[in-house]
Length: 268
Image (cartoon, rainbow, N blue to C red; front, side, top):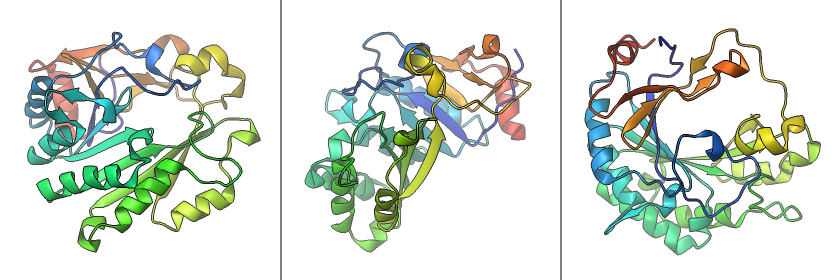
């Protein structure tokens, strides 16, 4: 199948299936991950070798599951991020922030990464009414307060190498929006909010379809970017008809099809 890839500057990895949250809009039921799945470090290294053949890739993004739960022997997520940086790519991961309620634990994590490479790090923290990980009365999130306190203890030269984003999902229900004063507070600390609509996928399709905004009409199904799960690559589709929204397989480690390689070389 010849699929248009919207963003060839990024390749993504679903790092593991386990998560310590049980969000009502979780996508995992739509994603081709087996229960308990975890990427191995060997698979990561083979993926990075493949990425060198995809000439436009600059960023490697991790999600899951909850990436901070990943372990393999003595290795943890910091080792994964450093391997990406050492391979010449900028690492980026999305987390629910639960590992960073303790500022010292967060500072230790960031210091280990920043001491191991000169590459920047992008961190996206999911904070919204669906994750239910902030106080609605005070407009504060313990994970963001922990992150802010950790960053405040870092040298300024290190702080400039961190890009902190907050991903907030909203629905047609006005109560799903974050308090304005909360957004203003954390933006004042240098965190950038990115708001996205609730999408009728996974549990949201089954339990909250009536709260999902109508998506923009797109005639042709396209893939946001290339995604690795274990040994296999996928091009998850968006747009088009409901029948076209799927996770078609697009090759395996060490065996990317020519049309995918060609799309990245041309930047198409």
